[in-house]
Image (cartoon, rainbow, N blue to C red; front, side, top):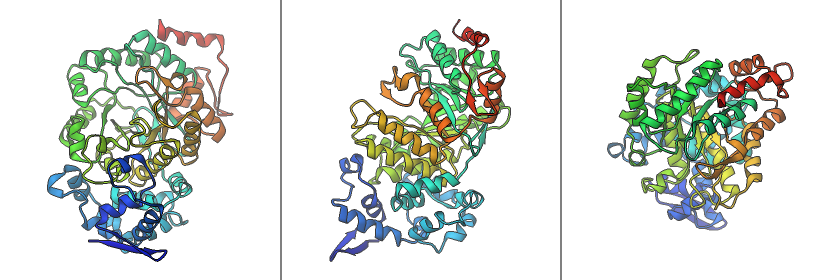
Length: 460
């Protein structure tokens, strides 16, 4: 099925829905690299006008990647909630945008509608929305999850404390963990990217984190971001696994490039549930995504990178995760060239995930060879905070010395909480107050008092 639109006396023709969505995407280097991007601004605008007129029902009837060739497509089609879709079945993409921006799209209505939307619908409507639109709608959408605390509540901004170390030195990791806790970080998760990705190392790191968590009765969860198959083996060996982590993508082939299948994720999800380590809930999965992952693996099937990214959120929501985050600028300038592209992608990812009922956070980050700097990350951080982001990732000094990329610092997130009057997760905020680190009345962190130096035993 082809599409066409006349603009300025010229007719623009798009071969199929896949080509139309690619041409409607904002400028980004990955789509240009793949030869999918619009060839002019006029063609891009024409594609957006044509996309706005596409009936939402077409996305239910059209497989952008063949059903028989891709298990993510099968997951999307087989789990689509037709009853939730009924109120939107006669709408176009443009109609959906208008509804999302209306007063009728309340938080309750958005939550009820989420199972009726497919990732391709979410991607399509995001392409005809300005940054302001993406933010104002996403702010209304709340996805609340629980394990040892409650993530995603109104007025809260959680954080992942990321104490990575280039040699996985336990004292170095403990020092960074202490630093983060003193800034009120770590309510989403204390999560380590291991320098050595092995079962033995994962066991050692998890044992150290769990020891600190139990010693100080910290109401949070810990995670070593090792491969899911390693986590399964760690669970078999009795390791202290709170959350199962895995990087995921929007096609079967891309996930196979990560060494993972939907069946493996299901096995790990069931194993983690059986441990019953959560105290207030049983959301046990943690996923990371990022635009460009499928393209970098040559596994995008001709889809633009934002559409295939949205499909990853269907994988995530099938396993009821506690946390999902886009590592938005991590893959590099080949896919998101500069600060403007990174900022737009971060807002898109947050909007699309929340629209699908996925608890989205963000690693507001960039690689050192991208045309971006810390001012761009400040901008993205504030925009996401205003848009109701679930959590942000913080590393010591905003410089990850193991992964060698730039992110946000602990004090960046602390500043954002102060600027926007946001608090940590309630259980974690209560713990911070017990430790004398947090003033519940003002919602601010306190100056470090002498008696709090007992926390330094974490490093001992």
